[in-house]
Length: 589
Image 1 (cartoon, rainbow, N blue to C red):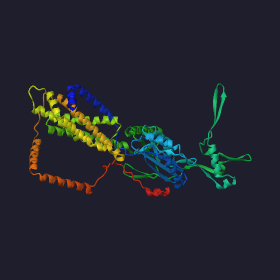
Image 2 (cartoon, helix red, strand yellow):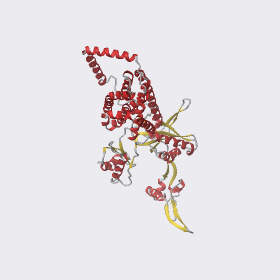
Image 3 (cartoon, rainbow, N blue to C red):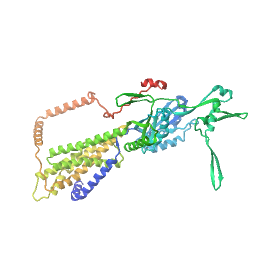
């Protein structure tokens, strides 16, 4: 079978070259479109159900909300774990699903179960947005140099303009806002006046809710047209609330302004965010109260394309939409890390190709043969890009960095070196060069095939990994396996075809003095080792013992993953849940 494939390639050289060129073009397009991640997403497939019950203790929320939700959610297909957290006024139930499930399908099943749960009146469970911990791709704050725009207005801009604008970017699933003062209308009731008029707090609440509505009045005919009638009753300002009638006594209307004071004020704060700016002169300026937003990427989406859309949206907001003096100031942008990662990988690949080509030229002694072998690297990389794109597997620093050029060019080195050796040392008068290349290829085709196949087989255990380790290392295994498959195709089919074109009149091999010296030393060492069998076994045993000691004694240490430093530091301090917000600025200082 292998021999027939090699013969087919040499008998149809132009067809093979055309297919190779098409693969190069397809691979370039796939490499350009391939999503690139700085770090693989190791998050589980999960669905989070959040229920708020303000003013209730954690015990009440646990008994009447969390436990009923857990009972209803139990038994959903593909669910691996069910976890819950209950706080005062808040219930969070998280369903973790296995890797074979699909997020959209999981969320549909959770929605079906939510319709079956019975909760206290007025409670509405909500499903959290579909994002993972690595989806926080853009952090920003709102900065105002306009004296007329205060912190409360910045918070309103964030809630009503920026969140909507960022959600319109493809790939953005949500925006989390922090800090700032949330504007609200506050009705400050005078208890003495309330008692004197015989009213209760509940009556005031009912009248405010009943009057804050619009009402439809059917329509009236005017000529040949009909005009819809509507009574507008929604509150638009403080005056509208003050004029709300609470009751009528002896023809006199009692209004809210008679028993209470209506003002606009900040909502009760549960936290505060501060930021320190560094001026050009190096001076630090502390801003103890800022408005912050975090743009969240949808789980499994392309972060690079989404960040491009976010940058365009930020430019549009800063230049045309936001009030004068108000700007979005990013302080953590995932695109910086992505560009650095891409640049590092491309630089390493370029340097690797040049070094491999140089070393191959020195040891093969033939520039044309070295170039043929060097082409194996881009061909294997582009072939892997095609396969990754077809399987929708994003590339990342681990997978691209795991490509070993020595493994990639191994088969091509053996094939091309044997072809050069045949053409230079076994020239037979009258025998065509193509025939000599065919014989040289048949001579090493089986060793090349089995050598690369064994290396690919060595990665099979990685495909059996599950959970976090599987999501972390499977993309690397797929990338290496696809690249080795591409190098196998190149070595078996394309290398002999290219050799037939670049060596039309045969080849000459350079006598490398370094290789001659190494060969002589290797021959002498092998003879000595065979004559003194105990010494090599003793040395191997000592090295094995030393390796075992270093591996298990903890002398050199170990880590699950290499340290990844993107140049950003996030310091977070956790205080007791009962800590007053008024004390937080003191802790920040």
